[in-house]
Amino acid sequence: MRIDKRKSDELRKVTIRTKYLKNAHGSCLIEMGDTKVVCSATVEEKVPFFCKKEGKGWLTAEYGMLPASCNERIAREASKGKLSGRTQEIQRLIGRSIRSIVDLKKLGERTIWLDADVIQGDGGTRTASITGCYIALQHAIRQLIDDGKLTASPVLDSVAAISVGVVNGKPVLDLCYAEDSTAEVDMNVVMTGSGKLVEVQGTAEGAPFTEATLLQMLKLAKKGIHELAGIQKKHV
Image (cartoon, rainbow, N blue to C red; front, side, top):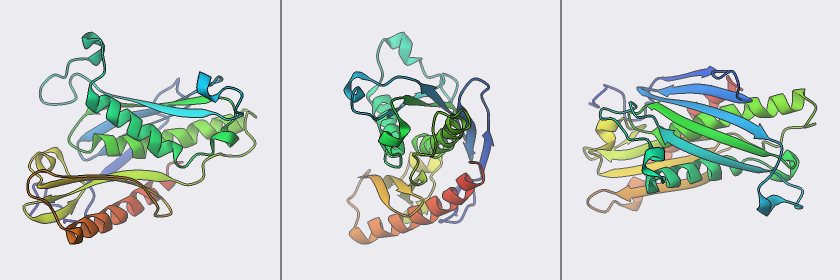
């Protein structure tokens, strides 16, 4: 029995509230269990130097955890003067994941900034951020189309992410923090709505794991992301 009495292949309760922020071009609050992330998309009518004269746009992401998002206060990284390695890794992951399903040439010479701000963390913050940022992106694209700045969407597919792992010797889906902190194997999977893999991050926290276990976890992740894709579709 899992700590929250879910089945091994069961997602935590997912709640999404769109148009959560007034000033963003697209935004949502995504809740997966007790993990809550505010995701927003902001359009800037310019591109970074490496995209200039290439006739394409850019999409990038930033990620952060609010000081009171966990049991012990997290110091603001601005007060330290630099981003932690974890923060840099996660925001690069979010950016890569969302860019994988966007035709940047069709976006035009503009940048979309995705921001994922964790207001409450209970495991799976990076995966919830990816799932929510896709929704925020779609709302921003719709506004660009409504404003006549785009004639068609550059988004080619949906994308979502979920955690899987081995807890007490059993593969499970969507780990909460209590499970994640004691897992024998911890893995994050990013996948498109059409079932193609974008990224797989898996680590044995103790003893090595088998290929059979890997395939079990990927099967669980595919099931979870299929369900998330269905939820996303209702909110874009």
